[in-house]
Image 1 (cartoon, rainbow, N blue to C red):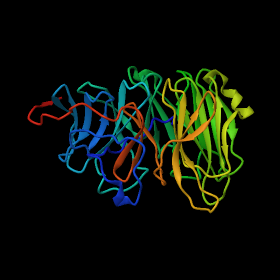
Image 2 (image 1 turned 45 degrees about the vertical axis):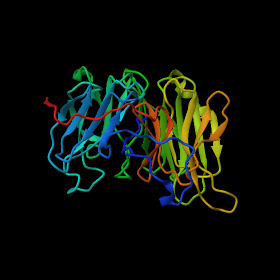
Image 3 (image 1 turned 60 degrees about the vertical axis):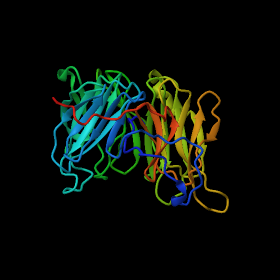
Image 4 (image 1 turned 90 degrees about the vertical axis):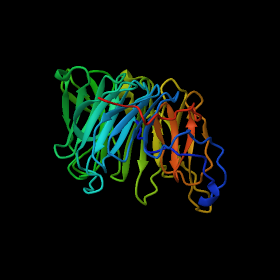
Length: 358
């Protein structure tokens, strides 16, 4: 994740896994005392809940009060993302979710301070991510092929980076802001090879840090505000394997060229790296295909001190891993398994009779 991870939905109650043909998970399941199929964010202490209603509007429930944050019509769909700092939340609004199907279409992007009953409109685009203690937000514009960077407090500092990728119309770059002036992001060159670019806003210099040796590769970032991790995945049927590279501090980003590998596998992992801030483990979805050729995927963690890899789930077919609300979560079959973070919340029942318009 450089990317802040995506939030989908939580489960209402503990669901029997026998209906999915799976054994009982050793991981706890996130539960609440209210209906949560439309919830988009739950704070780690359960005091702030953001959710959408059938009316199409987006609400905040906090301190037994309900606030309408964004007004919408029926059929509007919302998604959200947070950084490891958990001070603000990026919200995307898809007002024609059921009538216009395109992963390239620009969505409205808002930012809200967690727990506050208001939201600031930013722009339109996709894949918003918060950076640098939630002072910046980045997002991508498909039509313009531009990464946009907006300073949430001061619009005068906004800037853009033109993406070079012309071959894949659905490509969305991964991006990290190391500080106010240094940005690291992924791109694809004209021959289809993915790579990592460093941009210095002060000098206006672009530096190529790494280029994959195959067009059948994909690069993902994970940044815990201290250390940078890069996973190189093989896609398609080619068995190209997986590598995870580690850079101790952002100032040493050039050491990527020396390829400090902390994990390597001959199998094609799924990735979806998550590295929580101030936490000594990195989590990812690992390919554990057995010698007989039967594929299965689980969440594993790498101890960043010892570099030991441990499998921590037993769900057989994990395909996604997300970070949201201070938790690392596996969303699977309508159930949300908690890999890291609190899974039991206090009574968060909403008083639907008290709605305050903003």
